[in-house]
Image (cartoon, rainbow, N blue to C red; front, side, top):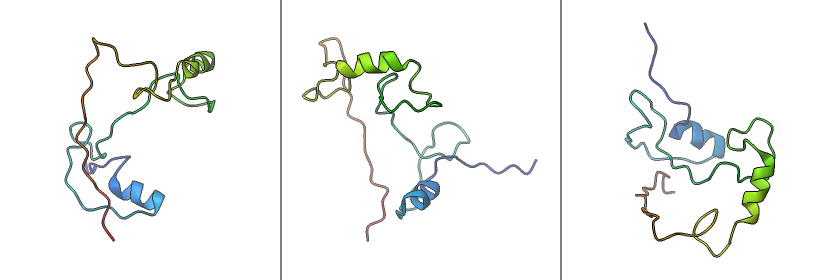
Amino acid sequence: MGIQASGCITLDILGRANGIAFRDRKHRGTRQSCHCIESRDIGAYDTCLNGCKYCYANRDPHRAFENFRRHDPASPLLLGHVRPEDTVTQGVQRPFRRQA
């Protein structure tokens, strides 16, 4: 059909948007036939106070405010604290930025 596989969040797109040069690295993508760079979501739903109208992450601005009040700057979590039944996994981080 002539459709080329691509991605909406690639190193090229991120680099051009931010004025950064990235190494040409192979990566898994986010799913089969997707060329988007792997990413990790570091947020949580209903936690941002910016109030953007079309944000997928905030379904309820009142809940976001309530969640914000539960934030503890001394905690490693965005909301609350690590509980005994929680599992914390350290993600593998690899640099993609090209060294000057």
